[in-house]
Length: 328
Ligand SMILES: *Cc1c(COP(=O)(O)O)cnc(C)c1O
Image (cartoon, rainbow, N blue to C red; front, top):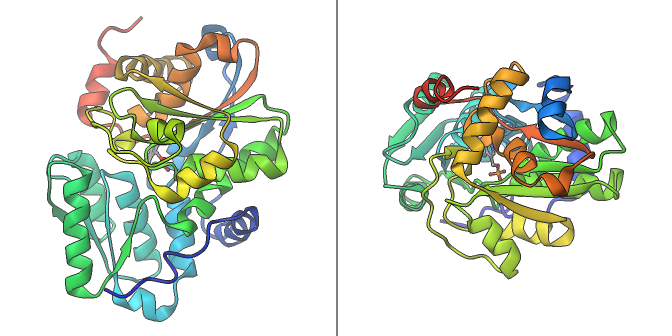
């Protein structure tokens, strides 16, 4: 397949995030960001929860999907898109393709969260279930793009996705310019890359801190190594489930990420319960990972003004059932 110039464009800049915001203003209202005194008491910090779980696809990624589709030419949209995902990126691209009348195919791993598969199909996309993990789904998506002449969208190495999701950090740092840190859950790293671009311009004193699960540390290890690596990916938290670093977001993270923390899947489950009991919020595991980092690394955050991104609310029925166990 020919190179996709639009999709392999130059690295995203702050100006691209600003452009994405003016476009997104007609499509998505800003999401709320609230503090909860009980949550502050439980964390020992002043925590601001950025509620990306209330986006129309239940996750921040829709900012990137709509920005990507808006930047394609009519001819590119007419080719149709194909991408691969464990779930929320799939919903985002499906939603955006529906908004722009483009055909969408998503390859999801065979064991993908059924609620997310259902949601993607409900947005009108074709879903192919293939592979034991993201690598298997990616290989199928690449073959499909080549055979069908569709545009292949990488969930990580796509500049428009970073620019679009960066608008969440414009909202956060405009509302609270004197934060000590913003904590961002990471899978491919587009969200954290967007945060780095925006913080560098609007709030250089605000540390951008990334979080992954110890059971899927590829982005963390890539950042520490200074080069993309592959790692075992055994986390149950599907929004964070990736087995490799992605070049584009890693380049941006190297330019300005302050720290990269790891939390266990058990830390994440605890934070998920705390969001439910102390912040009226149903988060999926990935959406609770930032709060999990604040709880698991108290010395890094004690007394600080900290934004945690509740990146998504698409909890599986197993996650919802688990919220009721071990409560207290
Ligand atoms: C995709 C996703 C993440 C990780 O974002 P990346 O931009 O891939 O690093 C975190 N949380 C949720 C809910 C997600 O859907």
